[in-house]
Image (tube, rainbow, N blue to C red; front, side, top):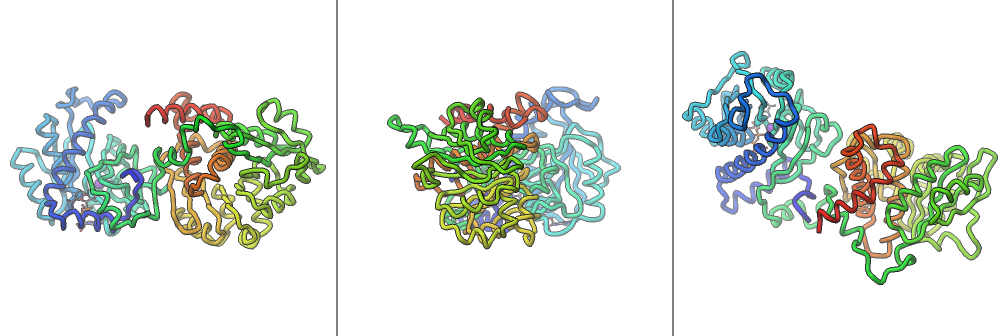
Length: 528
Ligand SMILES: NC(=O)C1=CN([C@@H]2O[C@H](COP(=O)(O)OP(=O)(O)OC[C@H]3O[C@@H](n4cnc5c(N)ncnc54)[C@H](O)[C@@H]3O)[C@@H](O)[C@H]2O)[C@H](O)CC1
Ligand SMILES: [K+]
């Protein structure tokens, strides 16, 4: 595992750091190392930022002329910030410090004393503060224990109102390290330098508007210390490119052939929602699956053929409302002929017999959209109890609530863990930070996405992409939750790339399918 994959709570971070100190690393040395790493990374960002944001009239130009406000807290977060203050001072920045606390930790107090000895002005009152070009937030890190109130809360709101870029150290001050909730008030950061390992709170949706651009500052925590606290297989992991490429088993073997690259059956679409079937099919195409069959109502078969000439389109009898009434597979074919089935987009809720049939099959199955709504009507847990083989559910929050009305999905990690253990399925809960759990409670969090994906049809693409990957690798001893994580990562990276080239309004679901292969190509080049 790479450092980027680990996710820690405040307690786990404290224990990991405790091991480092117990092994002999002086606390002051680590703080110095961290402070230097932050200063170097900050200088890179500040150069880039200068080119895109209007600077205050006081700005004298160049790195050295910038005016920097350092917000120093009473603990080691403040200590880190004071090391940064000293380093930026020596690099020629005009630095001032805001330090309103009476009692400081020893190390923090020493750094403050030295900063003042260098002539760096230090203020206790908001009213005295000069202007600045940007702020560095070192008020609180993972030691924040309670709601922020009084003059500190007032100060945080005051700095937020300045509308200056704010670079937060470890976490935006005021965010709960584990849950990401705001404790009273919180700094709205432009950029967050997360120290050592990703804090769980930074991966929660409620934190997103406070974090800005997040970056991990690796300060060489030994893997042994991490595994000693998190275990050999950590419960909660952050999806990264390396995990995805392990799962996608790329590059392909030179002797592969179409039957070795999986055969996926998509069951989707209706007269009313033909587009859902097309988008799911295009998502599956992008996965590189060897063979693709798509079962749709007879009346939309020609449409599917025109969009997906390489797929085997199976026209099925339909109800008067234009939904599939029953699966009419080609002769000498049954559901066990397929490596995986993905079912649901565009089906409408008039296709209950189809859902019952695929649930009773012994084929790895992904249920999405109306497949989930029908499952909820049938009774989620009782219906899935019959299944022995792999089941993957991919609800958005509305579908999740219909499937699991008794589970509070505010804490998304706990919600997917509970749903997965109750159903024995791998459950993906869609959102700005998609969470995935297997029945044993092992969780993947997709920490990078874009609001551009919150559009009709985007979920259909994910279902097809996931189905194609599943069909390709299901016989290759992979963890099913890794397949789901790979699909979620690939889908969101496609959206992120599309936004870069077409803005957040330019990522309709069809366009997204065109970016899936592009993002894979760029990622492979990046990795190789
Ligand atoms: N140990 C190291 O060398 C490193 C630490 N790192 C940085 O330090 C912080 C964690 O430091 P810690 O002192 O434990 O906590 P904080 O700096 O977050 O300070 C919290 C501090 O403030 C008090 N406090 C807590 N809640 C409140 C509140 N609501 N109002 C007022 N005061 C509050 C509490 O008593 C604490 O003393 C970590 O985030 C890193 O930035 C690095 O990992 C580098 C190595
Ligand atoms: K902070």
